[in-house]
Amino acid sequence: MELSLLFLPLRPLTSHLVCLAVSVVLFLIVKLQRRGRWRPRECPVDLNGKTAIVTGANTGIGRYIAQDLAQRNARVILACRSLERGGRAEREIRRRTGNNNVHLRILDTSSMESVRKFVEQIKKEEKRLDILVNNAAGSGLKETITSEGLGLSIATNHLGPFLLTNLLLDLMKCSQSARIVNVSSMNHKKGKIDIRHFKGENLPRFQVAAMYNNTKLMNMLFTRELCNRLHHTGVTVNAVHPGVVMTEILRDYNLLLRIIFNLIGIFFFKSSEEGAVSTIYCAVSKEMEGVSGKYIDSDCSVTLPSPTAQDQALAKKLWDISESLTGLDKRTTGESS
Image 1 (cartoon, helix red, strand yellow):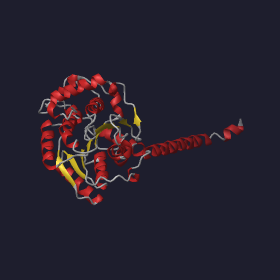
Image 2 (spheres, rainbow, N blue to C red; image 1 turned 120 degrees about the vertical axis):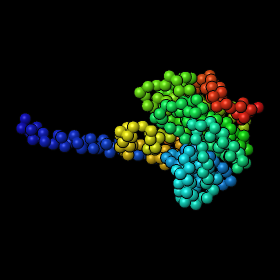
Image 3 (tube, helix red, strand yellow; image 1 turned 60 degrees about the vertical axis):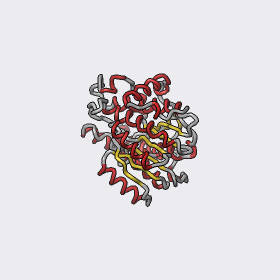
Image 4 (cartoon, rainbow, N blue to C red; image 1 turned 180 degrees about the vertical axis):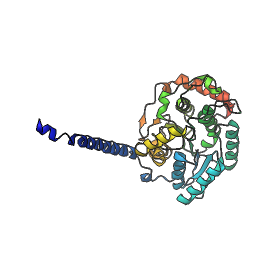
């Protein structure tokens, strides 16, 4: 009894040491996971003579994707909403890579008019397009209706990229092996499709992430149906999950939530540079040459998406709705004959 009393003061210390040891182990595990199995710097692929477009390239994952492509000597078009922020990214990427063939073009994916103007400009300037990365997205957006009568989240994260991709397909077919990469998320597994959401009706209340999850599911279904339509064209399309990443995507959430997210993220989330890896893998690696219609996880491995994301009938239905709402002429969809 007296012996046990002697060790009582040590018990809290032992408990703290155990907690510290567990925390260290967890931290090391997370760091190892964040390293991934494929490293862009070890990939020798050179993109000289090729052209790439990266949407949302002024910050976060998009900027690191664009920087990697520029480092590989590609002609890189930064498709950004802000002239000021996009201009800063353009200058920074040029400085870091020594590649002056990096150019800013204005694009707001929430506006179908902006998408059409962007494509019109690109078709005047470019003879081919080898890589299209649909990265731009918003989370926690205030669910307003756009001037074109569309729900803001769906317009920004799905309908804009849908229209952009289809209008650029003719240029991509001029390349021998063009690649489309749609940046989705594992959150697509929580998503649902409700037709009323497209025009801002019956929106989920008090669920700030719900519409984001829904649009990430749309990205997956879009990828699936587009893959079916691109057989024998030389153009591939894949969707990726970048991981849980420290980016500015939560800029539209309230301050407290952003503070909590950032504090947790310091220890457990990927940096934007690490989060760009799975997209770069799809865009440039030899392993992904000719591969289409797949879902690539944050560790650059092919994985199965949710059952809903594999629903071919739903993918076709979503395509038809998207085609109607964007005013996409079927003659410009780039479908194979």
